[in-house]
Length: 434
Image (cartoon, rainbow, N blue to C red; front, side, top):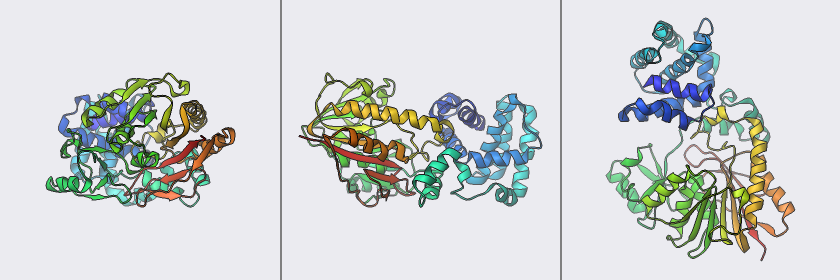
């Protein structure tokens, strides 16, 4: 299983694959009972990878051959176990050394063993050399650190620290089937501790993450897993029964389902995404929850009046973005995203926003959302749009307390990731003149 973790980490770091794709490829031979540990090793290693790589460089007397570069990933996985898990050190070392054989490099067993044993002997001194602070800028790419420091001079270190933590697990109770207090009682009866998040009447924060199949009534649609800041999208857009609603860039469908739940299923909702494959989880999610929507594969930049339900009363634009607000859930972003990507993303955001605006009826409302903390993708986009669209006006947004940390931002609302709350999100609510 350590070999599978090393393959996945190597695929992200060296081959540029997403962690989701890498885990699918590497985890096929891993037993079901070990999948949770595989995910923990991959996600945790990638969160701390720059620090772990620095340790590996110190522990090796010379660089590895190009053909053996996967051993860097294996040793990083081994070090992560010793630094950040409760796996007994002797078991972590033995399993990591054994993985050299599964990777077809049995001659490296002695090298890996010696490196990990040395770390155990010199742990404190070695960690002091590479740094052990949770807000260490070295854990983020330089370009992103520079942008965060410029945008949020009072908050950037906290963004880094929270983004390198394990994310909390937040549930969204389907109030069409069950009230939050009643579901919290069901969790308690199942031995799962949770507490309500203030400001969101659907949200429960678990003390510890659990597999979704342990959640009472999950298969029957009583509950879904959704970050607190993401749940705020439906609250801010506030769809009303009978309205025609468009969820653009809808996959994988959590917000789609929440929109329908909030209106008791009584929406004429069209869910659109450019990626047909990513719409399959959306359809599965709706089926599990007993909800219905028109699902369409299309490019939102080419939005047209022939789309089902147009013109719309409400539009949710969850725009493609850098995802810099959800790095704790997707640590591979730190290695896959490039600074040049931001300019390409902002051009896409502008194009989608302009195209969808034409589908909004007079008096209708559009909620622009990203899971980014970069002003380029957020308030700068909305400010530019307002300058060129005199029929658009911004509506004030008041965030409920306790969801996430809110920082001053105009136009719109910026949420920063919070240790026991929501991810980093941006929202702006626009109304089209009647």
